[in-house]
Amino acid sequence: MNDQPTAERTLVGDEEALARLRALRGSIDNLDAALVHLLAERFKCTQQVGELKAAHDLPPADPAREADQIARLRRLAADAKLDPAFAEKFLNFIIGEVVRHHRAIAAKQDGAAGS
Ligand SMILES: C=C(O[C@@H]1C=C(C(=O)O)C=C[C@H]1O)C(=O)O
Image 1 (cartoon, protein in one colour):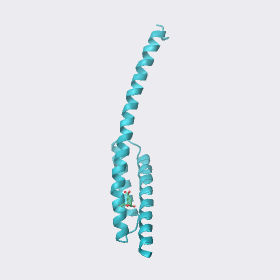
Image 2: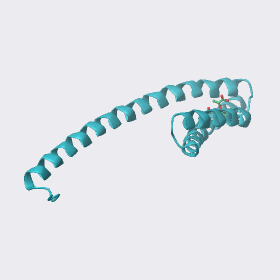
Image 3: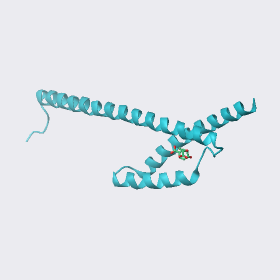
Image 4: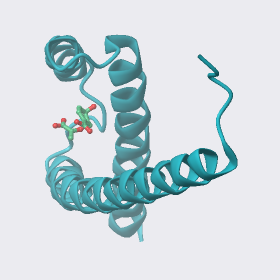
């Protein structure tokens, strides 16, 4: 048997592959949009946590809470067949940004109290 593809078969194959690529990219775009919306909602919550902490002189970071979240997310990732190390890195990246915001909120509050 000749397994060399004919010109037509190659073209049909290319079109199918391109259609599949377009469909997959459509789903990726939808998922990226969902991620942005989920992150926006998370940051709305953490903004309020930051204000609450600043108002009550609580520290911007809570390492014990973070350790619990990381352990939980690693378990969820493993169950979902996602690399737990990646899940941990991703959560740490987000938490790092949240703590930076909390420090900024606390500093602003201290500045306002001192003036
Ligand atoms: C949001 C909080 O503040 C910080 C940010 C966290 C987060 O983004 O999940 C978790 C712990 C804290 O270091 C919190 O204390 O709950």
